[in-house]
Length: 328
Image 1 (cartoon, one colour):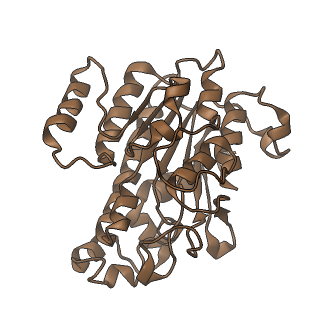
Image 2 (image 1 turned 60 degrees about the vertical axis):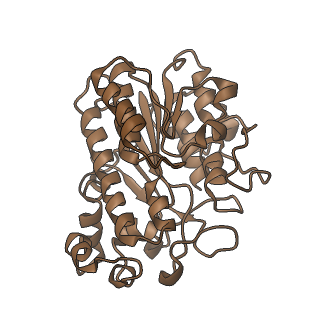
């Protein structure tokens, strides 16, 4: 299940001394990696990851107003062609050098374990490895559960080398930054850095974006995180992107697809930087996933939640030192 992969495996690969009672025998054999980047894109369905654009939704003017343009960008005859057009890094690089899980066409299932299939419970599950039935909404409640990021930050080898950058402004509560003092930059919070690049990003956030919502534009989150990585060289970084879920709730399949394509580009850019930077090159693993699924029925694909079929169905992708199996 996803909670095991994203929480326990992360701790094992970075810290061989992690308590063995939490470890499966197969997981215990993973090699140690020097750095881990965890990346999530909120509410992005496994259907698009493995099949590309949906044939019904992309042709629906209700969900895809400019069907002609979007089909030119993301449509093709086969699922293999469509997914490569939508997510070229995933299917040209990650699929060749890493692992993808959750393709239900092959009965390969990745599911959330929590009952609610909402974001806060999903992220709690990812970072604690457990479900908490008391966390049943997306309210800004400080999480009492210890997460794997603060567990690692307490270790001498990782102290001050763990950070989180998220588009959604609820993450300081999910990760309980008040308790553990982890650097968690979320929503439209600026980053106090002296670099010219970060000052420009801060100015855009403060002065250019007028209609600020609970979810910052993913591109701003990504640029802020990348600038922090360049300046501080963290060993563990969490990048939480949110606009795929925002556009899905708006019923805009065209924008949902475009944002998925942008997420793929951001991950590709970050991977390229990692693989050309000493200390990170061939010493870093990416874990990429989502917090919940969505309805599989084409007329209700925007929805997710408790007792809504398909909401618990997710996916997981990994690339890096610990999972570079196909090259061996």
